[in-house]
Image (cartoon, rainbow, N blue to C red; front, side, top):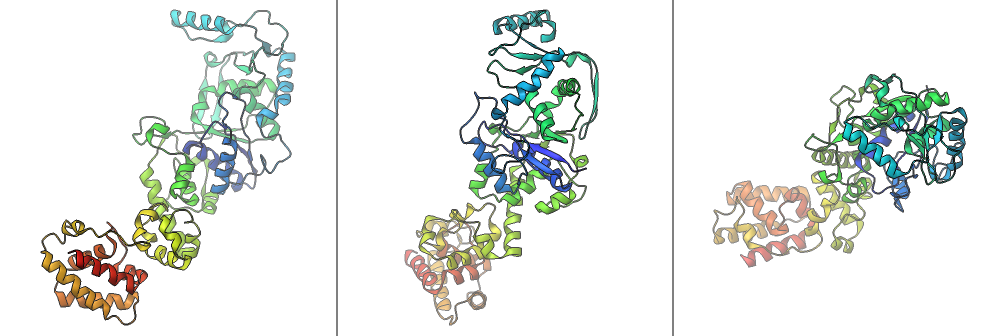
Length: 479
């Protein structure tokens, strides 16, 4: 079966982690079956509409490599793809229900509905609008809501993730189809859109499960075949006790991208957040996800969001790109993540720096903090040497002596490269009879005054003879 799936976000602000996972799974199903994925913008809630949010959605999908087959920008046979441009379609469909007696115009004022609701609260019974529907509804006029006329009964259905489901008649109600402003509700519009666009698989958050009986009633009223219904479990906060929200520390996808999380890592992490193919594999390319993904392996319980795991995975992808595609391929991803002082150096030098630092990066923005000393002389910080756990037992005279011997030894390196520098450092260890942690910590701090630096011989090689010796001399003078 060639699946036709859809991702139908609302342009109401930043694109959340959960929103993106709801795009990944439909994409994988569509690609796996040689079907197609439709991008549809559900913009009928005009009060929550945010200017520029649609472009943000499109940009995020492009960044992740989730190309759509129909929708904004590229068009298709089933447009328009903005719900706000499909009002005539919704009104034509709702007319079918009005004509068949399965919908009615509702003139009831909002204040009266609130009164009905309070009455039910006082009686401690569920509020169901079907118990208060007008006996003789008028002809519909603009400005008047249109409601579905429910026929309460039991419903059974199969959810591809949650399994066999069953509900009684008490959950059916007269839901609003068209609001006072003439725009459709989500409950109605998505039924129409999916039918018009031939959607075979409806994949959305598990929060819509409770509304499914009302959707089934609409399918039935229109004589529509039910699509495959797929409920995606919540992404949970790190505590595991509630649905993930912005207050739980999860940033928008855009913020993660701006921090230097790679698209491959974000796609990989979110696809595996609540899905596992039964193996121990954790790193997947997009092509591998398409090959291995299956709806029946989506877990039924919520998946706990773990930013530490995301950053670990991003580090794995940084190394993978470097190792498989080369330093230049990774360097091309680093534009905008270097310290300002790096602008004074050419690409060749920056690629050298990246080549010895890449395996320590969790996100690309780490470059700003980790590489500054490659592009500007650090401020000499004697206390940093004095407080180092390997050096604090040494006297100032011993430290000064070690630095002078280091300067002498390295000055004698005729051909300045990583191999010759390592030989010189090993000889210096024997000559000074010092532990590697003591000697190498002193040299590393003296040339970088940073909490971390790559392998010492590599760092010295990239910095070059002149800069390395000048920094060692500066440290010795300060001591």
